[in-house]
Image (cartoon, rainbow, N blue to C red; front, side, top):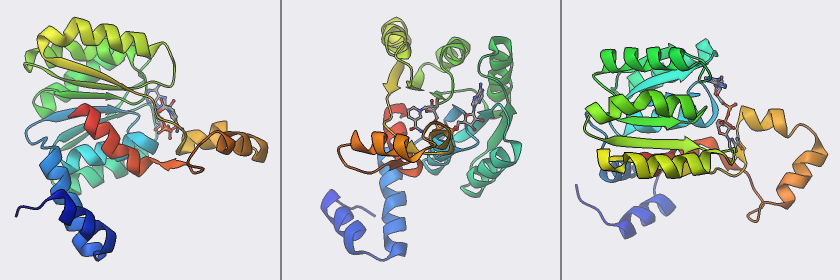
Length: 220
Ligand SMILES: NC(=O)c1ccc[n+]([C@@H]2O[C@H](COP(=O)([O-])OP(=O)(O)OC[C@H]3O[C@@H](n4cnc5c(N)ncnc54)[C@H](O)[C@@H]3O)[C@@H](O)[C@H]2O)c1
């Protein structure tokens, strides 16, 4: 079925939940076709990582779900990926441990047939180093960082320049305040919340489920 942006927006504004969900799925498929691709997502057990992983699967990718712990939640995300008809592999890894990251990417590539996309939602440097040979041997790929630390900005710029010749794109995302368990640990008093809200022009927090599509846009 073909549809235009206008009818899509109309359906989203006034349609029933069922129609909206159907169009949303069609929109994702139309914009981001990740069939045959494998995404490696770090920090995948909760918050933004879990929504990114589900978004990748919704667009047709198999997903390697890497996290330092949170096994039960990670398995829940894997279940969601499988319900969407894609393969999921859960990997316990600390992104600060370079050999551990390399080993887990090797395992992901062996079990899921390579790696095409890295979403370094938790950690960055070690994951980029480890993913490069996999993306190169796949003939190219995409890397998306979550840069809460300024140091990742120049790093992503230099990697984008260095890896461009290998058909690898590197993008850096700088999320604002997103309502995740992470935010609860940082904004844990009313004063801090008031301070934060005063600095958000829209006056509301973003939700991790909505950041999923932003990450997709940068990773596809
Ligand atoms: N939430 C925000 O407002 C916000 C804003 C800017 C940047 N960020 C950054 O975005 C990323 C994700 O944020 P979130 O809010 O979804 O976080 P979150 O705390 O809700 O989830 C982070 C996940 O990463 C995993 N993790 C933590 N350390 C790890 C490690 N060393 N190795 C592997 N996995 C690890 C955790 O177990 C958890 O499942 C973080 O890097 C955070 O700094 C968040």
